[in-house]
Image (cartoon, rainbow, N blue to C red; front, side, top):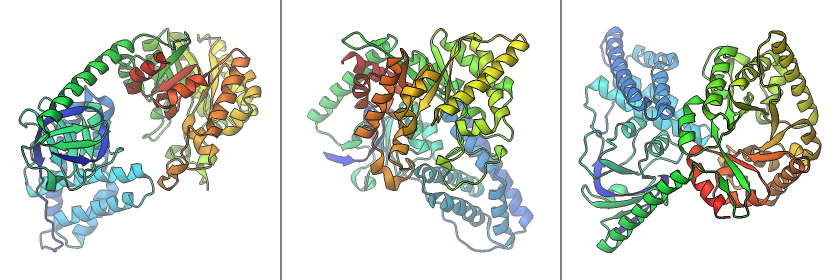
Length: 539
């Protein structure tokens, strides 16, 4: 029996047989040819069309069961239609190069640019381009695609790497998991595996030297290891462990519908972070008692003009109605920093994370802000909506935004448009100055919600997307816990409440600490809710 270590990316235990997936490497030479440009262009257009049809089919197949993950393939379609990419391909063709080389070279330029970025997330996106390039070259050279949708039962796919398309095409009835040599925890392949519920381990070294086709495998996608040809004793152990974990998950989901109380009787509200109305179904299935953080940026990104008031109203109303009578906390526009919007013409800033972003931007773009507030207020009569302002640093900002909110309310009253006159407002506490001054700020709001990701970033003066500074991401260190305690105590003194909506809220290690600090509400990714409630009940 061999034990191979890797990176866990999709939890669960699978026991099955190795099916080696070895792609034929597509050889491309850099020779020039005498084929006219127009003829090569015609072949390219046909290959692009076929590749688009394949991606669209994958998108349609995935859309109903996993709409959020299906968006990955919408992005792939945009890449294929990118004029800059076509321009680069044309450049190589006009220089006389053969079509496969022109296509590969153009993609290589894009991939290299992504790999040179500091962000690990953007580096992972380069893997997506490899997958699209592979499909396009196969269609240019008429090389058939290997079919992953028709594997024998009890298969565990073993591959150097899987593209998102490969992962989406896996036969979920017969494929029990996969193991790859390459890949990381933030790749689209990993995200898809988790969404599809396929246990997966990536980054396993010397995979093909240690596994042969047909070998019996046990993979643990929670701890990140692969056992090759296990003994009967080990196999029986994992069969029993798998049953126990499946039963435990089933019970957790059933119990997740109920409220979570500590043993001393304190109820902790466990709610969901969502990014669009598409996330509502999953949040409800997982037992969310409301929405603690409704990110509204999805309405503003990937478009040429701002969303209309009506578009926003519909997006807020749907979620409020689905969760009624439970609370839905809508965070007003939080862009700038790492989220840029071309139509707003941001000025270049040396330190955008410390610049005009979130509420600071809204105070500069008053009409944009008022449109959003009007949409939120109008939707407030359809459920229990609360408003939350991001990145507040000082009380003057709250006074200013509340004044703007009053103006919008007055405007709606003048037009006899109904809204919740008693709508609650709160702020995200994510800047140390807000936490240190919570005692004063609490007089201007109804609640606090602590954004632990940014609070950690700003407290340690460390960019949380910079992998070289990952050692400074310390959300459970004393400085952060002191800031949380200050905020909680300030709210309780005035009979108000404090929630946490950062990554920490769903961290099993952090939950007991946050509850003991007096936090009243935890808002997290829906998939983490069942376990979070179990932890709260055990305290």
